[in-house]
Amino acid sequence: MSQKHLGWVADIGGTSIRLALVSRIGEVVREEREPTPADPTPQAVVDVVERLSELILPAKREDLLGMVLGVPGIVDARRGLVLLNANLGWRNVPVAELAMARFGLPVRIENDVRLHTLGEWKYGAGRALAPGSSFSNVVIGTGVAAGVLVHGVLLEEPESGEIGHLTWQRNGWSCGCGKVGCVETVVGAKGLRRLFAEAGHPVTNFMADVVTPFQNQEPWARRSSDLSLSGIPLCVGWPLGSVP
Image 1 (cartoon, rainbow, N blue to C red):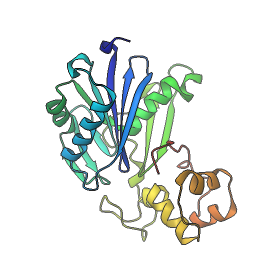
Image 2 (tube, rainbow, N blue to C red):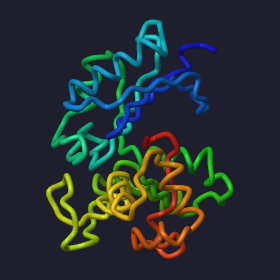
Image 3 (cartoon, rainbow, N blue to C red):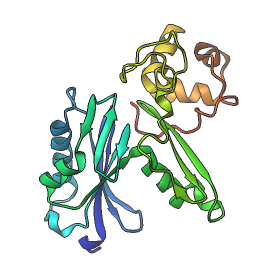
C-alpha cells in the first residue's frame, strides 16, 4: 500500500492516547497506545504522540498525507484550538499549531466524539440510514459527549455536543470544569466507579464490572446510580478500550 494513501489519526483521551495509521478508505493499518501522562501538558501529550508515531511508521513523515487529532472538550476546529478540556486542564491551547511545528504535516483537530460520529455514520450504524438522515451518537468515557448530524451535516460549533457539562445535580460532586454536579461526574467513568464503590461493588475491570451489569439491567447496578438504561439516552455507547 502506498504511503501517500496513509495518514495518522490520534485519539487524545484523559486515560490513554492512541495513534493509528489509517488509509483513505478508513482501514486501520496499525495502532499503538500509551497512558496519558500524569501531568498532561500539551507538550507532554505531543511527546507521547511522537513516540507512538515512531512505533507505527518507521518512514519519512513527509510521505504522509497528514494528521488528524481527536481531542475531547470544546474544540474550535476552524482555528485549531482546544478552548477547554477539563480533564486535561487545557484552555485556549493551539494544538494544531503545536502538532504542525512538531511533525511538519498538515494537521486537523476536531472534537473526538464528533470524529467518532463521522466514523459511525460512514462505516458503522449510519450506513443503514437513508442519505440526508439525522443521526446522533453519545459516547461515555472519561467524560460524556455527543455528536450530531442534522440532515447529513455535522454540527461543528465548538460547544455542540458537550452534554457532559450540563448540570445534573445542583448539590453533586465537583467537576474538573469548575462547576458542580455535571452529567459526567455521575455517568462518566470516574463517577460510575465512585457510585459502584459506594454501593459495595468496587470496579476492577470497567467493562465487566460496570458496563455488563448495566446492560443486564441488574437491580443493584440500577439502584446504585439511580439510572435506567431504558429511560436515559446518555447510556447509549461505550467506546471499547477507552476506559480501563
